[in-house]
Image 1 (cartoon, rainbow, N blue to C red):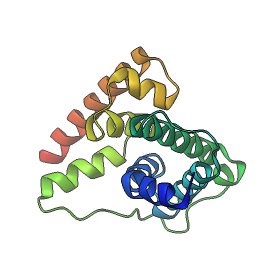
Image 2: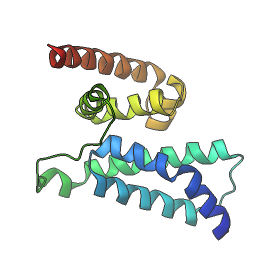
Image 3: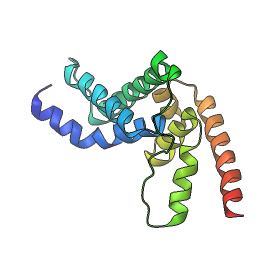
Image 4: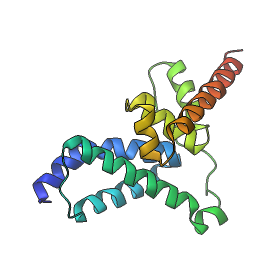
Length: 158
């Protein structure tokens, strides 16, 4: 991969990789680390991609694997966060902010499935391929995530 091709790939897919990592990890610094690791793997990858869509799919798969690897690391399991306050995004409407907060409160597998399905527009089958799960499992995750969001948003409304 040439430097120019790499720059173009980063421009096209860098934000998407970061958003997926952030949806998994809920931590900006960790998401940036995963994004850098993923992009480094892209830079050192010696294979040619069939299309930009194939490249995007490969990047999302690598990013998801890197997130899971980070979540499984012994260091992360044995240590706690220095500050328990989580970063929050700023939205124009309070409803958007509340929805984002509730989505980020979901377990990592649900957050990743919701992000890929609803925000990136992947099908259930494609989401399953990216997350290393069967399509039926992804459907279950999405159903459970919607149920949890519905309950929590109704509680917040009341």
